[in-house]
Length: 574
Picture 1 (cartoon, helix red, strand yellow):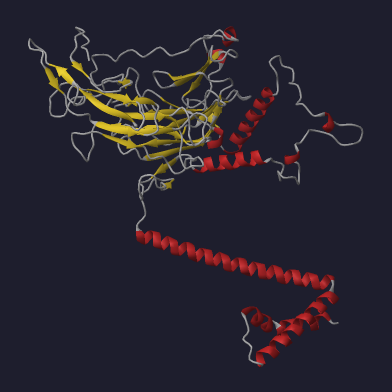
Picture 2 (tube, rainbow, N blue to C red; picture 1 turned 45 degrees about the vertical axis):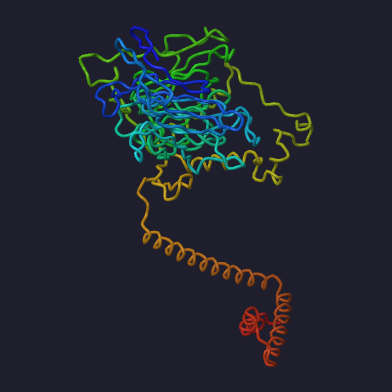
């Protein structure tokens, strides 16, 4: 360890077998100090020791200058320059499935997320190996003076592999260190479509579910208010924009062309399924602006050598028209753009000591003045018109001519009077295995999307079981119910179920009676023959009963129906 002013050695960390270490990029806000030692600065770091034969890998959480490990030491300043032994590490975690580690420090620099990964998954479930997530904390509430390492409990709603594990896709901290309480973090976990969730910064328990979708990236705005969940790289480029404070997707305003009377209008898109947006080109770079008001996505070379360009989205997911941008994306095509990033914000003014950000934290902007919002049927009509116009544009090629029609196999092409038309795969044909005009893959996709909607925008209440148990979720985020309330609810549900079963039985009885009447009208002779056969069986049952044979329930019901059957036979008039 060296000082930054004179570049003199001030300490030494001894860790046998260490292969890498990690330091936070910031000291922390507010400035970190060692408890009980005044204003002396502290600096946390992690040390990773790979596993060897018969011994698992290990990660140590260290703190300069007092907790760097028993073999470490600091150098006293002065003439003597005596080595001062350091204390034990704050925390140590053995890792049985870890070949690589990726450390993500919190904005307060007092905790870190540890993503471990193996290059090969021994279970064969994943081509990319296995992953696990841990939370390293400087302070353990149960053991003052020590840190702790927690295995992050993932929501039960995350899709598991066949062996019961949940892969980690990504994890990021909320970037604002000045929010009240512990700084939370977001995790993307499970197989695609993956589940994005928000977790408590100390207990690591999930607190909010963003839902399941094909997403692999979480970008948090600098102020920590807005969150963009994206599916980049080898995914289609879908994006969802959330307001973390309100716990819902941001509604999007769409400005309409002025009406004949010159009045300007707009409509608000609020449906959750309509708020997701998809980039028109593969996304390589992505970044929030320093003021948290816009979001940049770019396609750059050499990762992608086609369709290079930069697109800007507003915080609510609306795309800024290219005519409003000071650059021309056509000049970057096909492979002339290497990088695109926002210029960092200046440091806050020194006159305002309480200010941390140069730009203020602003919520969603109100609607512009003098513009009327369309609601009800007028809004539905306007949105339908916009959707129709968008579809027409998508069917057009770049020069305005219609795009080439989809390929149709020769055997399905129209010939003479023998039908033809668009080709339909056998599995999707009516009456085939696909049933209802959709293939098995399509129905599986619809089922996944339906399940994803069920866990979108849900607060997670306190867990009632051990770590790893199913989380209790609810739309309002209320506390767990008492035992008496659960008992009453169980009784109510049992009563409703019994009433539904009774109503269903009564409905079936009426349907059978109606069907019998219709059958009598259609073929009375056949019905009379069946009734006579049943009456003969009833006579045999009654004779057996007189001889001392016990009757079962079905036989008793048949005997009880004798009178109604004889009346029905008499009514047939045969």
